[in-house]
Length: 172
View 1 (cartoon, rainbow, N blue to C red):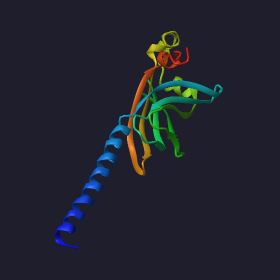
View 2: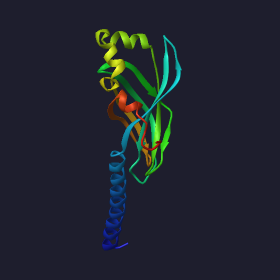
View 3: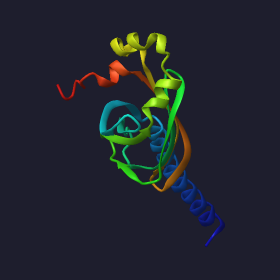
View 4: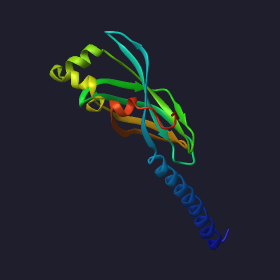
């Protein structure tokens, strides 16, 4: 192969690799711009000593490629007081361009929450006004998309209990 042929082949390879890298990076940027919001909660079991529930986050994958959440390590706070840690290491796929629920299983002792989170002088106002109870989930997700693994991607979302318990406009 002539010197000119080698240079042309080298430039062609650089062009193909560069175009592919640009495509992957543009999709990765869209993946990092996914949307999430509280979707509500569902109770599995409730007693005086244990509450087992699912917190539902609605996740919208804005990219053109599927995304897999491969794990998460999140902390739940009520009125800025730590309540519980939520961890999972199982895969959940989020299809390209779709909004899908992510169920976060939460176990905690309600007596500890009452003792550590809610001031007993204000317990009646909290019971009446759910907008005074702020629920926050923050921590890290691990995500795989298009063969690229991103570990410890930060997330933080907060909402009032009144907003979480309000019926979704999609279901009414």
